[in-house]
Length: 318
Ligand SMILES: Nc1ncnc2c1ncn2[C@@H]1O[C@H](COP(=O)(O)OP(=O)(O)OP(=O)(O)O)[C@@H](O)[C@H]1O
Image 1 (tube, protein in one colour):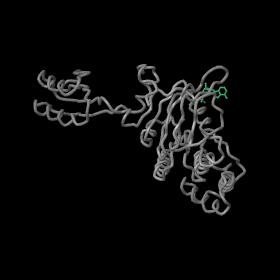
Image 2: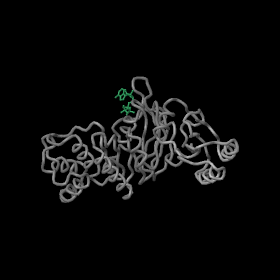
Image 3: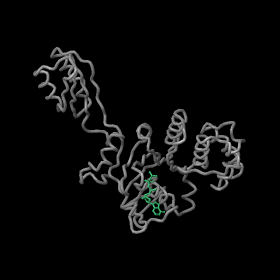
């Protein structure tokens, strides 16, 4: 049996469509109050997984628990929020009417809806726009209205599918702030996004999925930990300095094509090797122009993983 406390727990979750497994033994855990990024290429099975977590699609096999219960339970569903990627709203309703409608559907009392609707409108940056018809909203405003509907009934777990796809850079920052505020209130957020730089800024943990399986999951620190490639540019590289650097890390690449400059890439194990690098360079009389540690970012990791460069033992690391 799965535990009862996590926001989401799946074990060997499976969905077969027409004889093909589109979700194929997916095991993951999202804790309460955690912002979790669910990443994968088109067709990886992300939407199908979200639909199973919401109780909209019946799994072919495996176990799924959300907020410690079944997504088929109306009591559990009432505590979930969902912003779908393809939102289509009733264009003849005003923003307020749309949210009143969703509030009542979610089981909020009329008095609570009256206080809560202006609150969420303000929170998503639509204060003062609630009396306008949705048909006159811009795409970004509609996405904000959808986000307002998703958080309206104070859910404990919110699914956001590409929540910033229609938003300008300011809107994206605002959505990030809303996600951070939700985390602050102990709400778990399951975020599906192709904007990896954005995911990197807001998520506590991520899972990479491909062909319906989790290739890797963990905190950003765990996933981007390990070797740190350091870009170094000097005026000259003596053989003594090269040997000294090789004692501190692994020299991967040396480029002396630009006159008066030598570039090299050194892989070090730990961040606290960096000051020792600078000391060694100065100690050998070289002039230092660049010392740039590059942590592998999510995008690089995503591209490597999706390229199939995953050692077999790494698959589905918990
Ligand atoms: N109702 C369905 N019937 C048959 N096949 C389906 C159904 N829903 C999804 N699929 C297939 O399952 C696979 C996974 O689809 P899914 O929408 O879950 O992927 P995704 O990771 O969300 O992709 P994207 O990033 O493009 O939104 C796809 O090959 C899709 O064609």
